[in-house]
Length: 334
Image 1 (cartoon, one colour):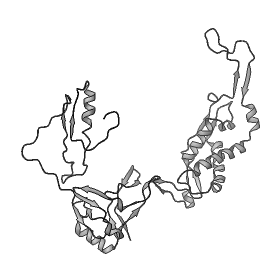
Image 2 (cartoon, one colour):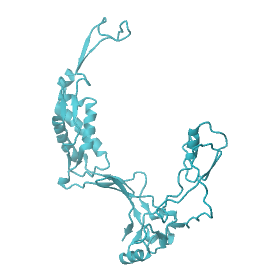
Image 3 (tube, helix red, strand yellow):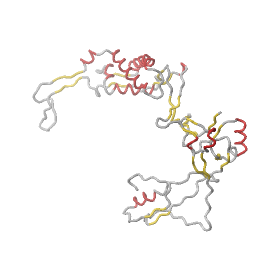
Image 4 (cartoon, one colour):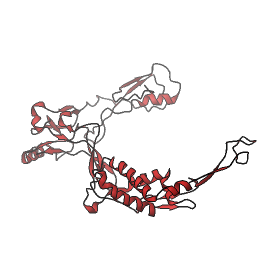
């Protein structure tokens, strides 16, 4: 039960068959009864009390609450909300929005004030090293003072054979491939590549600090090459001055569109019959504006198909200047 990730919301009794040797194990066993079965608020805007009975678990600090005298308060009646097959003409289909991303159609730009810079440090990638046969000294450590020829390896040959412009094109090509692989990108590669070439050249000449004896061309070596691509990928965004859409919805990849066919749940809140809806009834989450007169008036005047998002297990993420939020709106279709 504890090692296999047992997960359940309907625990009403826990019975200890054999003794537990530690209080920690007792806590873990008792904790299986802490998950609530029902998260709906009552009339006092609080969760209703739920109790699990525990036998044979010697948990010393388990809080004890005496049973109240008198008859227990009955549970509120529960109603089933479901889609009605005979009312399929009011069926509503909607996309499952997983989030939002900046849409890229044609023009891109970079926030040069916020992009991360790169420092080429010769202590990380040495421009020149000395090599020798791996002979150990008396202490068992490799040394250059033993017998054998001492050889030098440097970046001079690679630097002399490489052209900065050619390597910029290679970096822009890899950047275009990665950027076009993002879901938010709708621009074809041949439209993005010329823009990214100019962005790469400006980034390497203005945002890269070189510590001698290193050279600027060393930025095309690992790990600087990958750092440059990562920094540019996170900083490139649509050019809104050119009329690009700043955000587009990102749909779920593994599920198709949702619909009111999936609605089937139980609720203890007040429910009211509704005609112009695929569902058998509507749930009133508020104390006033969702009650029958307003529901009837709204649907009669608009002549639309309407339903709330109860039981659809779907919501739309929204963003604000404070924090990200999830919104469950009422759906309607003409």
